[in-house]
Length: 396
Ligand SMILES: Nc1nc2c(ncn2[C@@H]2O[C@H](COP(=O)(O)OP(=O)(O)OP(=O)(O)O)[C@@H](O)[C@H]2O)c(=O)[nH]1
Image: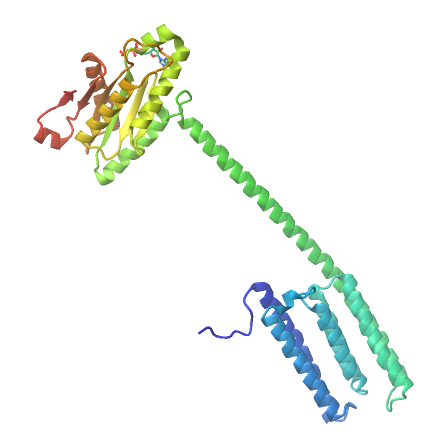
């Protein structure tokens, strides 16, 4: 069961409720003063009038509190309800001031208290209007007393009080004007800061995008669109690090196009370029997604097969070789298929990247020597292979 809180949820609504309770405390002080003044016969309010006015004010306070507490004020145009509160406060204060004579000077303080509330939300013009209403209300009280010749009424004292009250109100209006100015300045600066933050955020995003683009460009082979040598180095180093942690071996394969010089010579560099692009695409299709494929240089590609073992490496190399062998290069009228030779090795514990690349390159050389369109392997570092197969390298 949720406990009832006297304050509503939400910062704005809570602030409004707190502000209202603060002004309600002024009503309570005002009513209490009226009761005390009546008890000491300093005010002319009859007990029934005092009782019903106290009842109505209490009802007003409770009603307003529930408006704020349950957010009903948001359905009203002036959702802060400042004007309504001000008018009510001026009305009630004038009512009590009208019923006092000797304590009237003290009760006039309530008017100033009301004006000070305008500092929270009203602008200069609205504060001036409130001050004008207060001066007018007290003016009416004086006029009424003078016309009906209220016993104990002193016109001179009341007029002097009215002048003093008006002077203080003018002074409060000047302060309200200054506060409006400061508030507006703070609001404008905060809007400016927000706009600048938005611009900085936008610039950061653009910078991040530009950096990402630059990184992509730095890692991409311009001709084929796959990773370049730099990309390969990066990926290989992170796989080496991972291998040190989980000890899962990975395969390093060098894929070299056979007799590519003849393609260039026969069909020209442009068609040679297009053939390289198609080879890169075919290799990508033949390989699993998690495989790293990069152009090592010229007509040579490099492949890193994560979590590879002897069998899976041989299967993948064979898959790459056959996929190129079977691919029909429509732009080239070839009498024999375009093929690749592949040299592969496993990167195992205690290995290093340069020696793995050297082994793969030596295997590639063997594949070329064996007639091309072949896969050759150097699994000499794989301990399981040494035990099970007793082989240092194999050519298929
Ligand atoms: N079209 C094109 N050709 C390239 C590119 N890079 C390298 N080559 C060519 O690839 C050929 C490589 O020739 P070689 O190293 O003799 O090797 P190969 O002719 O493929 O013969 P083997 O590798 O021994 O089977 C050269 O003619 C290079 O000019 C490139 O980006 N585009």
